[in-house]
Length: 190
Image 1: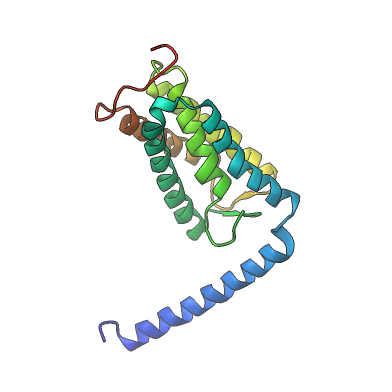
Image 2: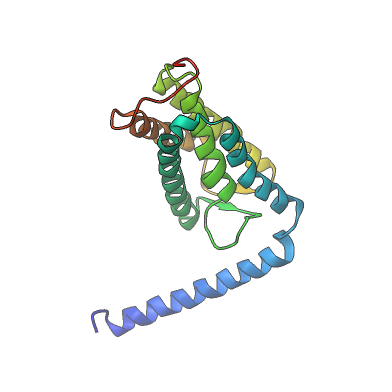
């Protein structure tokens, strides 16, 4: 055996505790969260941004924008999972109880806002857009979700989120606006 028996036993014991805690979490979700107004709002916030994007997107640039959205989704879910696992924050009223991240924020609001930021005023400095994106995320989005009871910072302050949102936006903008794509179609270019 590659893993010593005593290490494997410790891993098994921790896994059993995690599985038991996850089972309890799902029970709470089914009993108190599913179909509550907070859950319904979460579902709405998971669908509405994508419907708005579908209606108002620059159709010629959909693939480019979606590649940026995929980047935002990947990074935000990864960072959110790390933060939740490290005990920096926690979420309530999840759409589904199987993910450690908040679906309306990570899979819907952040990527759709990112795509709209790219489309609006395409000649505007990406640094300025990154500043706006980070301020909106850290000082508007997070406090609203905290006030609604969805998000509970434990060892986290919104000021810590500011540089993270800034870098995530700036890297995403660089990836999407790079020369390896066709030029982004805008109203100004028509």
